[in-house]
Structure formats: structure tokens, C-alpha cells
Length: 297
Image 1 (cartoon, rainbow, N blue to C red):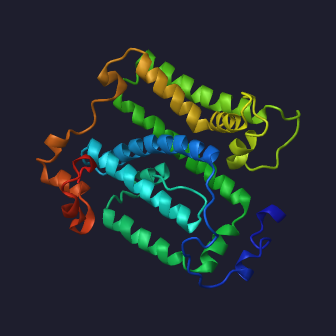
Image 2 (cartoon, rainbow, N blue to C red):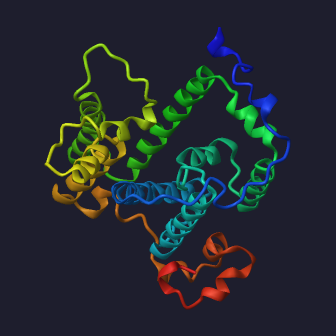
Image 3 (cartoon, one colour):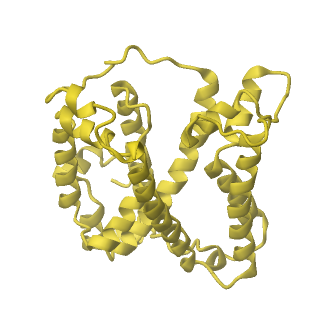
């Protein structure tokens, strides 16, 4: 019963009502080249996930898929947001949340004004310490139940994108099957390597990859290289990304079979006023960046 109570953390009692977050409030950021290499690779994979989210969002709002320039613009904004997150000391980067893409399908609300209004509300709530304390006091069992539902939807949404390729192709079935299987088995091997049988690690699941760096199977004789390889190869999304990219680009298959024909061409998209209205920057900001051709502005 203790794990189901909301008053065990005493967060609501000790938290202030108002607190203004400011940059570098936790001190000067510490840079480590080993973690830098790991985060570079993770950022690339997060960008690939964002590309799929952009395309799925365009389908839910019944508009044309984005062009290469628009995709570059979105990834660039995510990079800027990650820099701001580091300055504010949030501890995590910024990326497109695929669960929010499914929210569009559930709520039928795809207006950018609604998203902007929600962002303003979140910024205002971040100034109220009691709100964050209430969220932090939610029991872990309730969070776990929410994650079960959320990740189930996330997996279904990701697999639904395969319908734009030749889903009946044995080639695609092998690529997807191997990527899913190896992304579950290989990181599990790395995370369990060197641990005694029947022992439960007290490290949370999301910190397991960084804990593996001290006992992983890779031993090259260089501590930094061992840290990077053991950490990277224990991340599920890294293994899934590497396997899928290698197989998709080496196993023979046509553009339609690989689902490469669904993207919009910049020349054709610029002729449609509705397309420009859907993807233009708010408040006419794009006029100041008309010369940035690669950003789709």
C-alpha cells in the first residue's frame, strides 16, 4: 500500500508555490567527451524518429508530407531546444514525442494554435512549484500503468507507418522482424553481462545503459572506447536503428517497396497555397529567412 500512496514523498508540503527557473541554476554544465559521443549518436536516432513523426502528423491533419527543407527546419529547432534544455538544467534533450502524434488522431485536434496555447499553459504551470510537486508525487505503479498504455499506442503507431511501403513484401517483413528482435535481445545481453544470476539491479531502467559502461562485454583496452561502445550497444533504439538502416540499404528493393515515394517535392509544394499555409512559420517569421533555401522557409 505504501507504493500506492501519494503522500510519501512530501513533495507537496515542502515545495514552494512559485519558483522562477533560470539558466545555469544548477551550476556550470560539465562536458565529457565520452558522453558527448553517445549523445551525438542518440541525437541522430532521435532525429530519424522525428522524421517519421513529421510524416505521420501530416497524414493525421490531411495535408501533404513535408519537404526535405521543412524536415531540416524541424530538426534544427529541436537542436536549439536541446541547447536551451541544457542551459536550464532539465537533464534531458528535446525531441518530437511520438505519443503526441497519436494524440492528434485521438482528439482530432491538429491546429497549430491549439499546440501553441498548450505550450503557453505549460510554461505558466512551470512557474507554480505545487504543480510539479503534484506530478512528482504520483505513485510509480500509476506511472507504470500509464506507460503500458502509452507504449502500446506508440508501437502501434510506429508499425502503422509501414503501410506506405509494400507491407506484404517478405523483404520488409525480414527487415522489421530482425530490427525488433535484435533491438530487444542485444541490449538485454549487454545489460545483463557481468551480473550475478538472480540479482535485481537497483538502477532504474532508463539508467541501465550508462550503468553497463562499467561491466559491459566490450573490452578494447581503452576505457573511453569501452564506455562509448558498451553504452551505445545497450540502447534499444540504437540497435533497432543500425539494423534497420543497414538492412534497408543493402537488401535489394524498389523505391515503392521501401516507402520512399511519399515525400513532397519542394517545387511542387510551393505552388499550393494550402501547403504553404500549413507549414509556414508563425507571425511571418519566414520572411526574415527567405534566403535560407535548405530550411524550407
